[in-house]
Image (cartoon, rainbow, N blue to C red; front, side, top):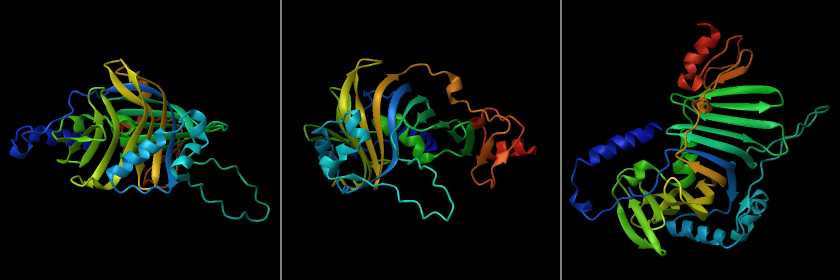
Length: 329
């Protein structure tokens, strides 16, 4: 989120400078960027995919076209069969090491399994609450004004892992990660050129970002970061949006049912069941209190802390401040 603030500052400075080379450049400022939202979603984060060969933006669009040819319903997604028809495969987690004599195998829960949940965001505040079907496990991640916390629940036990912002998590759970919509992109000037029956918007001032858009329908089909934007090569990460559907609120635009976001061989999948935008999210959605006697861990603080004290609204504080408070310093 801090990078967004830097981008906004640089964008403001850019507006004070005249670049003759950009005299005929355009920007996407008329396209919709949500400021808040409530989304019912299925997610699979950090899935390792075998067979991805993405070097150019043409490769990104070819993958999108192939995925669009078959069903992308819930059954196809949760079984991972939708990857088969494009020659990809989900890599299963490595098997556990052999157990010593007398040990009992505890059932594993893959971190990249499909989870169902609700995603709330209000400006830079984000909350994702998920459960893994068929298990007694749940997770809540909250990104607040000063820090981030992940609460994991198993049966009646809760653990709180508190750290500074997860930078990559900020991005992938935001409108940029889910919809490729972000103010810092749309307000920059860039080159617009025809591509695959739509328009290709190339922004090079900050992020070397590329979007395939349909401005008439206010739709975004794909996004990528390229090291070489002239040749559209050197893809460092990309996002494709599938099964676009129209929504009239709060202004007409297209939202995807499925978003696939990849960085290397690691991919995040978002199957969006329902979305409301520019709605008021209760402030308590982004508040995390640590009850007395709960296991709390701060990144870099060493051993977990169990304290008889209650810690209120910890994402508004730094992990260091909460450690001091829980230790009585």
